[in-house]
Length: 217
Length: 308
Image (cartoon, rainbow over all chains, first blue to last red; front, side):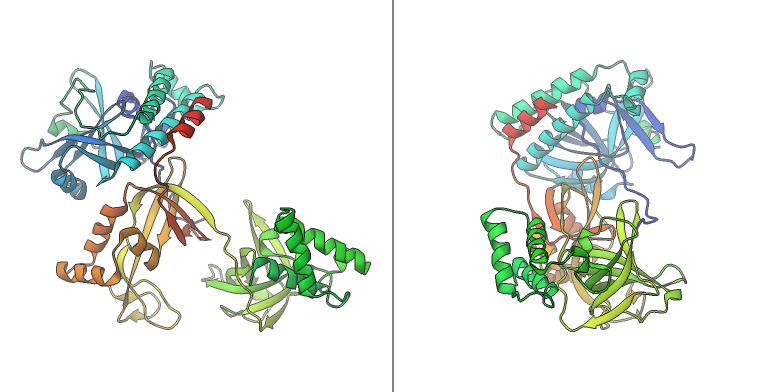
């Protein structure tokens, strides 16, 4: 019973450190409206992500209209989330949340190239919800497992996205394996509520507002 | 009635013309194999059936009526087999082609299977909810999914005893990443046997009607590898969100808008992990049971991770 409904893209599980290293995007077809995929350095395509972390800061960086930026921290780094007038529910959710708080985010990867040529990766949220520590821990364990599986399959013959990652990036997948294992090991050491900013990312500024908008593909 | 008892009665029935054997005796033998010796039920049925075949000096082919074998729908695993079924018509669908007279789902104790009947076969119409003995239907396979085709030689016998339809339930686990439209507080068509969800107060079959309120969530579970669409019915939705129908109606009344209900529910369920068990119906798994998978077992996750 095949249906004509288009298949929904899976939400990839990826830690912030790997996500932020992924600057390369591509399409699977020439169609102008074909979905844009972010190439993960461990060799996977991603048109949607699901992650759970600690919202440590929120700021309205918009000029005329509200444009909210959230910093969401996982064991490896920081996800930047931007929500404005076109994501009204997510924007109002960020506005209402009081950091620090565990949040679960479903969203689309977005890239933006700065003037000096570095590529910033951020998330345009489809939904943000406040969750508990057990959900966060489950996500960390799941994401570690998925990351390790991608690294293990990196040298497999016929792994098209791994081949693409080798061509597009100069990044060693073993780094992500080490990060995934240490994230998992940290879960073992008790479960205190993450209390927020620990300076995992030296650069506090995401893309400036106008440029972030133009980055919306 | 227990599953064992059902099996026992079916076996006793099969041999009723050949041996003096009652369901009690069969049940005892099945029970011994299944409970004492931990033999899977399928295997136990086979073994008990074989021993009665020996007693009766019969070949397996001679069981059942006519030539074709009475088969359970979930045991169908080969293309182009002529078989007999003892089933209930679970659901009728809209035929997509003029050559098809009826299409839908048949079910028995083992599960459900799609069936197709063609105009050219000139068969009596089947009725939803009625149980039948169908002899001489042909199995068909498409991309690993089996169905059965009724044909000109198929004989259809209504039976009075209702066939119990088992759920070929599956379990899916993942994060709830989306709630689809048509969730929250909805209205259904009140016409008999129609339960269609109204769109702007209209039923696609019966037009403008005074709808009846109901709760449901159409959600998407995503485990990072596959996505599964899941429908939570009134009961499952209430269990999941803690929100009952009256509360939902009040909430919608206050806001003069029913969509607030789905938004409120989204806050409670999006981004959480669930383990859902239920039968698959077209694209959807119907959530009969919903569990929170709870705290992650870090030790076993570590062991697994290090083995990758």
